[in-house]
Amino acid sequence: MATEHDPVRTCVGCRKRGSRSELLRFVASEGRLVIDERRSLPGRGAWLHPDAACAARAERSRAFPRALRAPASIDLQAAESVG
Image 1 (cartoon, rainbow, N blue to C red):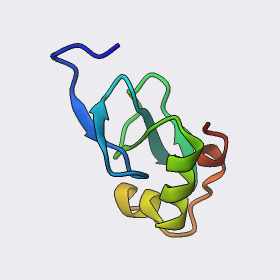
Image 2: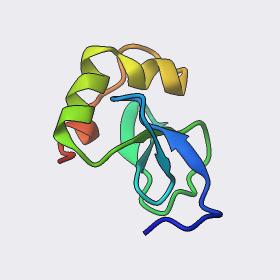
Image 3: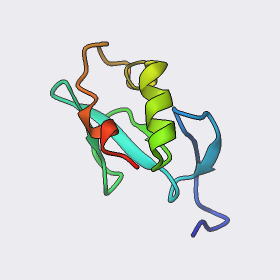
């Protein structure tokens, strides 16, 4: 449940805004996309609703490499397991 002080982030899949507690954070680590369960890993993060439709939309639009400023060859296997 979101609180009034919970930071707002934008989903890279559907582009809708949501509280940080509603979204999953992903980071690029060693050429792979990794779910940051504790939301504390270093580096840029990409936020995504835990929904297969948002994950598919983010993959189709190549949103993860763009949001993370990572090479397009990043392994997106972690995003495929969402939903």
